[in-house]
Image (cartoon, rainbow, N blue to C red; front, side):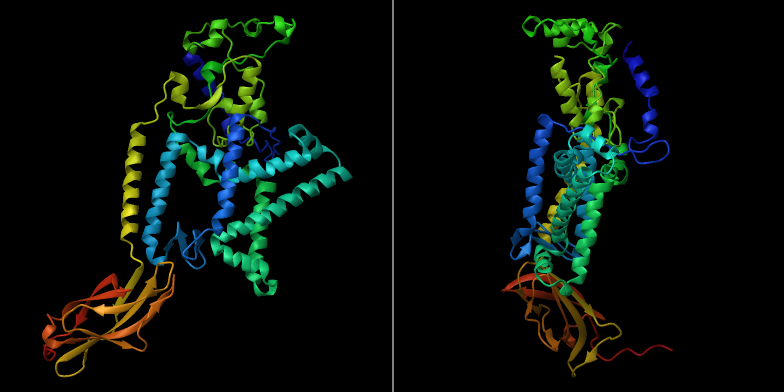
Length: 514
């Protein structure tokens, strides 16, 4: 069987793409009980998850100039990113940042597939590294969990189920408070917790609703979030290319699959056995091939693949797929199948990496090509957007000023030589501290007269509004519209500048023609 033949077999056997592994032919949910994974990748993912949880829990307590380091307060339209306060007036920066993030996601997926999903996605971290471990601790491994689910409701089963779901809901309530801290702020969350419930009915109800939703995601929906709900999983189908690095099964080396025949394995005591000869007698492989596997196209037709069809890669998969079928939407690149396969390869004395991080190009040709034309194009767009983001944020002032002429009025004649226009102003403080502020007009001969109280300071993250008249001598007018410049001064420095027009003419109004 040559390379073309194996590809034809793989292409013809794609019935698995017509359904998902968690739904049966009648449309009913198939509950998954993945076997507990172990191995070097699982250990690394555990440490990455510990770091992720540490950042997730500690971040709401970090403040810069009295403001939370990260805040996404949709209710009050207040966003703080890395200590920078963004107001509704910065909506264009938010849109640009979202575009930049989308391009980054596209580039990252084209190169590394769903690496994010398997390592730092909150759904994966909470499900696989917290709630799944609780299940293993209380109910045992996959076989014990399946047996418990099918058994009648005995006191022991009730005790285990109540304990498991009680811990899951308790953790859901805890994590919900931290998620809310990123929306309404940790100070507000602590206030809701400490003060009587009747003072915060809305906040308390929000906590209960969010915690119930959080619990249902990890106790009921589970892998369905990744396989059917998450939009990023759907994007994968249009973003992945043959050069993308994903968790992949080496079908060139692994096919055709052959079960190990125990009767052919040398039964002599371990000190007399030759492990290479054992494998040779079981599957008919030369010892040189085990050390230096030859390309599939050069192997003899009778050559058996390295996959012994143990199905352990399927047993550990948290979404229930068979990675040997190829890249699938349900695969989150969690690496559980890599660890499982490597453990079997060690036991049968075959090279590791039958399932590994690789691209389809790398598997078929042995050469990886990460930096393709598409990657260079996405990288160029991403760098351009990042440069624009940095430029606009660097030029973003700490005060946003809006000055408008009052509608419906032309001008007023103050005396024989001066005219006035009425304006309204809004001063928005984008900084993390209170700012003194005053308006100063730079046009020669012009003067500002406030209607009511003169602005003195702007509270942090808030705005002040008011009105004022601009008085201008007639001899300074230039036609019907005269440009004027108004500066905002804070602590002796100009922090913003607004250009507008003064309406008026020098002399009496011209008569209208009949």
